[in-house]
Image (cartoon, rainbow, N blue to C red; front, side):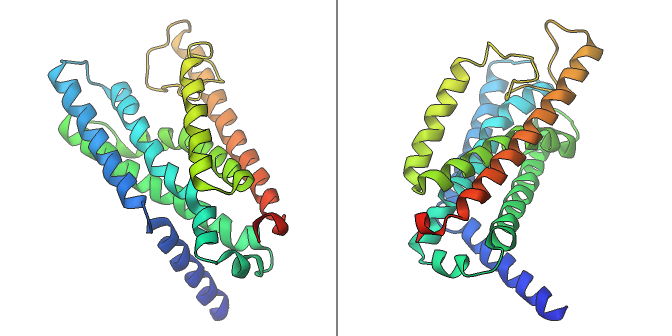
Length: 233
């Protein structure tokens, strides 16, 4: 029991170093800068500030927070020559990358709470935990999709290009799925345009189920890709 706890603690410490290493702090600083910029612009433009608006301006910084550890994690392991060691651990996908994914999602969730708390203090009083929890659904979806592409492409820069292009096309066609259960960018705090409030709540619930199932499917697909040892070593 004690040896297992020691092993788990070592795995957690190593993965935290991986998450915090490299450019993560640059992405964190960029997220903070964009968040402050959006708040300043909203104040100067006299935008109506409510919880729906805070959700929208926090969405992009949230993407920056999840982007680096998901896209560049595999490449960092390869650059550090850790893939050979990690693939030698029994049940690699469960003991290493699942722990890392949980740590990443928890870290992003805590940071989103802090961002929402700042917005609540400076702009509009809200429940930061509620806002962060709602943001976690699309962020986990997009982060898991990034992780899936990273396991297929294996190169962080190439994966980043693919995700940027995919995000560009999603933004272009977002109006087609706007306010539907397929809308990745659905704002659960917004005012429904074509639904009653009760119907909109049902759409939100189905949308969160869709995002959750999609994230799980992407993660499982990525873990299956990681079993192909020859592709990585």
